[in-house]
Length: 390
Image 1 (cartoon, helix red, strand yellow):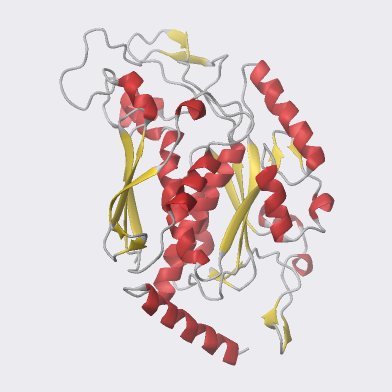
Image 2 (tube, rainbow, N blue to C red; image 1 turned 180 degrees about the vertical axis):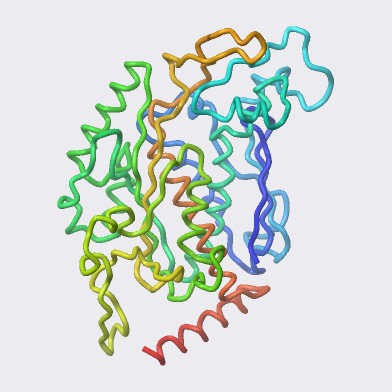
């Protein structure tokens, strides 16, 4: 089964990841992984750190001649900014005598709970790992997972549906195919497919930046080509919707996740929520609507999987909120680190790849094998059985 582990600090030498469970013979396109890392760095409202880093993976193990070997895959992503932090983030030796430690926690960050939980003397040691810089490894891991999915016709994309209080007009998008929706979002500096909303979203981000403030947003992730049968209703931790929601909530600054109609389903009668089941010899079973968001009873039902998530505004403000020095207990304004005015378009890319990981994980649980040949044999045999029963 698939699993991964990451390590690294925001200003350390590099970010590191190890993936175990990828089948042998799976093609890995390095440019695809690097392109996903590039996508993560884009978006109107991003901060200065994105101008410093040019993220690329350096393979350390498990890949040979562009294919997996069935052994753990390892890669690193260099932190170019580390050269500016050599004395402050040195892995060996003693701390410099003039090292300025952080004792003023920033509201909305992990600074204070991390300081208390790990008995830290310097909050730098907590914020370095809690930093969203570490989403780079998650994106790369997901970018590898989505190459497994794509070999079986599963694709993912994301788009912004709201920035601050500026929302898209759904009617503008209603006539677009998924391909058109994805293409429009990809070309937008705020990752939205609604041109009218795009202008207002950019203005909202610019105003927040001018005010020394930040703004959040809501994005939607859609996965197409997902077969029936990923996940299970047998146990709560095997439900596909629960696993997706947990993974997306694990992305920094995400405060809410919904599948399909989500919270709106609570306001509607059941007749407007549940999806009728239809059948034709050509299509087999299908649904004319997708209020379930492609998942029923914790199992993928063959319709597109639709996930939405809400990202809070970045908590580091250039007009900082009040805080308290943990040593003196005196009130101060919180420490300022480099920050984005809005990172919702980037978070959409991060969560998109996070969902890809969960789908790949569930896919390998269903169709697993030690090689891509075995996985494909299992997948095709299952698809033939589904076809015969439809």
